[in-house]
Image (cartoon, rainbow over all chains, first blue to last red; front, side, top):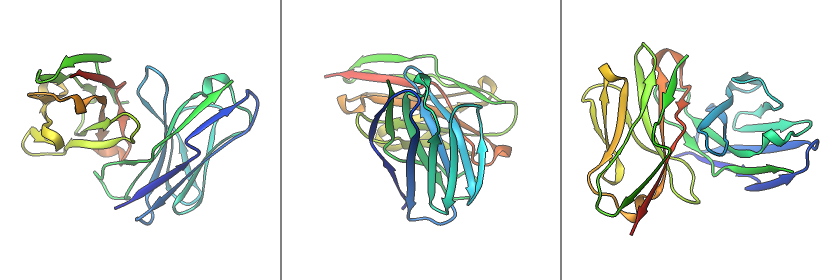
Length: 113
Length: 114
């Protein structure tokens, strides 16, 4: 079964600083990868997804970007954080076959001060 | 575009009470439906899913959900909750022609009092 590693678990960053959150997946090859954000009082919002190396689709316009430099590595970045970027970020993965459920990492809680 | 609504944001129950969490979606086509659960301090995990066939699906830990197509609903139920069911529950929908993209509801935070 697949395992998803996310780090760091918590992060406090000042406004205007850069961000890099990393996610790696074990136990599967050529997965679909996703970044979700869970803001306080809201549900999970899909930010980015990737079906392969170098292939990134953005679901919402924002201050963030994503990259997939390797098959099982997915990075969420920002050049300058905003206060509104605070939230709980979840990396998820599923095999590239129809109807396969998502597996989630443990998440990163980001607080922008 | 599809959307998912979970009308109960917070639910507080006593142990042994029955549970029903509402989930409605808006999408006119064929969908796959999911319930995910996030226990305190843990990651999200799949509780149950519906793809086709019997609209009443059984999941782990005694949970079940019923797909009612005419009502665009997929409510989660459990006859008798336990303190260990305290968690946040997310309903999710995947339109069949949207690959593996999931749309999540806002979540329902369930607290079960011992």
